[in-house]
Length: 181
Image (cartoon, rainbow, N blue to C red):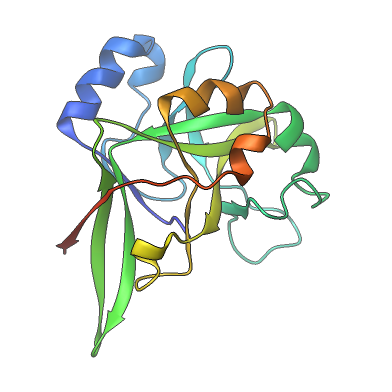
């Protein structure tokens, strides 16, 4: 699962140079929660979009979708074909129950940005972001059974252009995992 992301000062500076100033000023910096505005890349341009949708049939906001079933689920199928995006961040957070507390971990890779596969879903005339997840890689399985789909620079373009084969390939990342509060 991916329930929070983080935008560091270094990432903020990169995004500020990369994005249109009007779009950049909408992006939530620091720790970003569902409902906040993320920095994303579509095929056309970098944009700022809110994270999560609240379907009428759901009690809670949908913030993630499973990569294994997204192409089949009626709620996501069309958007997966035509409304792909990539979330740009520095890291994401995950929690693990340890003794009587939920320990928070910050997870990043050895790169200035992480690119998380996503889709745009329209809600009340506004496009919103849903982050795709996959089964956790072995090195993080001790913490959680799901993780966001993290794309390399090369995979970003292929994903945005509709290539599905990269999503079934085994991606290996060297993760940096830090306890945080």
